[in-house]
Structures are given as structure tokens and as C-alpha cells.
Amino acid sequence: MRRYLIGITAVCAVALRGLLVWANWSGEPLAAGAIADRIVVWKSKRLLELYAHGKVLKRYTVSLGSNPVGPKMREGDKRTPEGLYAVESHNPQSSFHRALKVSYPAAADRFAAAQRGVSPGGDIMIHGMRNGLGLIGRLHRRLDWTAGCIAVTNLEIEEIYRATADGTPIEIHP
Image (cartoon, rainbow, N blue to C red; front, side, top):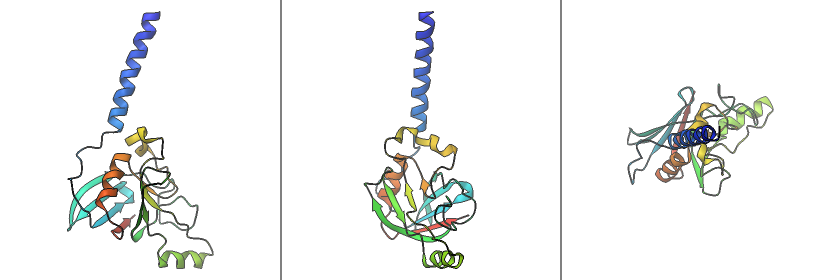
């Protein structure tokens, strides 16, 4: 019986190691020194694309707000906004592994929210995993879990963070 338990434990350990390796494999890395001049997010495809001079540099699968269908209407609706924005700032000290602040809400978002008598919300980011949970890696993509942000793995946000400057345009499509 003891040998059986040791065998099962060893198989489980190998399987877990394999799962963690898979979950944290980011595929082909972004070319060294690549600089993006535009970020495009396709919510329905759960896809973020980095562009330079009209050509795709790299594509990333993302998780969105936990209520992803439709544009962000108000604070707390757990929707990822839709529209034209920009990278407002880089935050290396985020509670998530690195974060790019999205310039939401734009004037049109504030106006629309005011017409509805609600707050538009804010603090929309493109970020990695919550600090301490980085080993989850690609497994986070199994569901939309953010409060309205766009989430990628820690290795992926490292690439995106390096390749984008403050002011880089962001298009978020349905």
C-alpha cells in the first residue's frame, strides 16, 4: 500500500509540474527591442494585438471583466470598456504584476455616465496576475475574472509593458 501511495504521489507531482510548465509557457517571445505604436483589443475574441507600423507584432489571449458583453456603463458593472483610449501610465508597483493604466474614462464616457446619473468608474488596466498568483499563468484564461481590466500572464505583461510607451493608442472593440 505504501508503494502504491508513493507511486500515486510521484505521478501527481510530475503531472502538476507539467501543468505549471504549460501554464507559464508564453510561446514565441516578442522580438527584442520591438516597440508597439498601437494596441488593439477584440473583446469577443479575447485577443490583444500589439501593432507597429500597421503590422501585428504579437497576439495575446486575455481575460476581461467578469461581465464582458457590452461597453462599460458605470462603476462596478465589471465590464471592460469599449472605445479609443491610450496608455496613460506604467505602474511597476501595482497589486497585479505590472500594469498599464488605460485612459478610461474618456470625455464621452463621463458624459454618457452623467446622463445616466452614475459614475463611469475608472482604474482600468492591462495587467498581469495578482501578485503572488503568477504560477496560475495561462490557466487564468479559463474565465473572465477582472473587475473590468484586461489581464494577461506575467510573462506577457512584461513584453507588453516593455514594448509600449505612455500615450500609445488603445482600441477596445466589442
